[in-house]
Length: 398
Image (cartoon, rainbow, N blue to C red; front, side):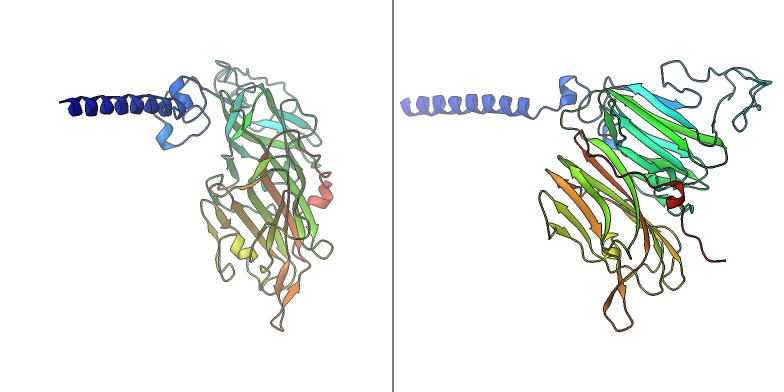
């Protein structure tokens, strides 16, 4: 009987310990959403089919030409103005209908003009951007986070949406979707804490009469460890710069999440033997991550026998290495495999092909690129954006 009592007391103590430990673990692993905050799953931060049923205090807002501030109850308030000297496309179509009837669906951006697309206070997360314009590198997007003076994103519009060489091609990926004829969408999550400003500049000599756009965002709290989205455009010729530098000068902790290359091949034969290299956290002569070939990095094999567009990788123009010049539009999103670094980052790719002697040969190709990454602020200054003349795509000889 005494032994049974001792066993009972012992078991009771074990149960009590298990309850205490269980309560501690439950508290430790409780999700932010369960504690009533907007952070975590469903709070506008990590969205997907599985989080849609979760109700939070996040508030959805959307900016367009019909609601330029994104404020609650401020959409569709424009009043027709028949005396407007330089109207946007379709501006007079609603003159007989009046306020509330698609009066201001588009913006007009005159030659040399910069317009502000978004200028709102945080905290929040941009979740989706849809844009239609003329697919011109003369049109430049710039994003400024939290009142910074230099942009964290500075990219010609089409290249930002993985459209290279000013040539339309469908893109069907998780981060970017491009639909006929020039409807560009991006779904990169872009958190901001205090403020965000987005500008659109038309450096062309002609007016842009139709700029259609919509920026969907959520007003919600931002986790302390959330980085800011960055994107940078570069261009060079591999006869002068080989390996070609995709990104350099990045300082601080971050994650590299994507590469877009608008590669113009200038000699016949296979061009894609070059290795991509990621130098991080003090790497000097040799990188920590070294790829095995251009088609390998874009998750292909034995060349690019046909175009493809998948969730994370694609080559979307119907290009061939037997026709010169040949235009390649290549994207690689590191969504499930981000490149994480702690102090610094440099990314390069070799321009390398096959010679007739069966050996690798250095190429003299024209390469433009967009690098996408998240990092803590402040960011290092970007190189100056090349002039419009230096941004124009190469054309086939007439």
